[in-house]
Image (tube, rainbow, N blue to C red; front, side, top):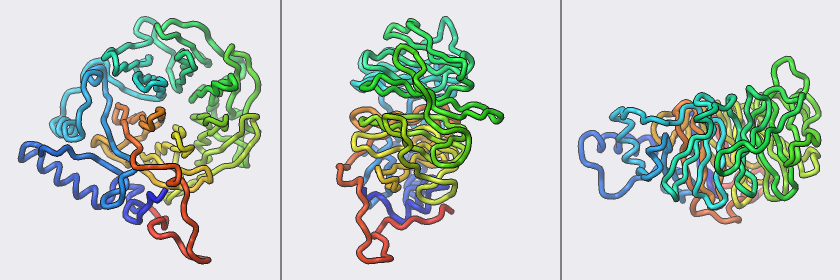
Length: 382
């Protein structure tokens, strides 16, 4: 993708490179001592002067964010001033879904026992669970009719709601122990549910249902660390070809299965360098087939190509808008707008993939044996 540089590699743990950190200090000083500049500042990755690939767009906290799209400077000023959080605000975002037209964002809130629906086109806000609280909602997804599928931990199943917020069915099975992420393969009519299970459980797996709720089988060959085995899987995603991506959280990796349930590959391992994880959670793919993995432990998002090669990371630990603190879910719309559930900052952070083509997903081979492509050398986080 041509994204990587050594400065940004050093910032994997702390969140921003020295260049971005210095820029933030300038912005902070400007917000305190002078009126904001006419030109809107944006937080981007990688740091200038490299071409921008990921741009921070906005934060979404509550129903107040429906009617306005605050700039980064405005959000930063509000953060510094300690603006009081509004009512109906996000507390613990654990699931995200976005409508096909990109107009509606669905956010499951584990603490609020509800799913918030932000309709930016109609400038309206809906709360599913206002009258009948949900049972600790986790992952969410949408089908082709925009029916909403909500994995509820306390109910050990999936509640399905129509566009009016009415329950139309409940999907469960006695084998479900602790449901987490959920995804739908629309073309093949399959629902994938990550069953995170418990420490004493022997079947950490991804349950497979049809759209009517019949159990078809499961992904994973049991609890463990061997290829195809899982250890506390949390989130799941499906690409256009029907490949299934599973964040195998306590194995610190992502495993990939094909549409027929066969194990294909894995990438990532525990560590603190490029392509390594602490606690991977949400996973999603963009229009180019690149894989985005949210790492709750490192508080960032890493981007991989289809070969499992790491291309870039963005985010990093911190409370400032655009930064993350123990994020979990992620979803990407058809315009490659990226939504990340920022758990400890109690918000959804929105980013945009820019200046990118399909060719950027490939890393050029070394010029000679033993050589490393310029600007792509991984370094240990410091």
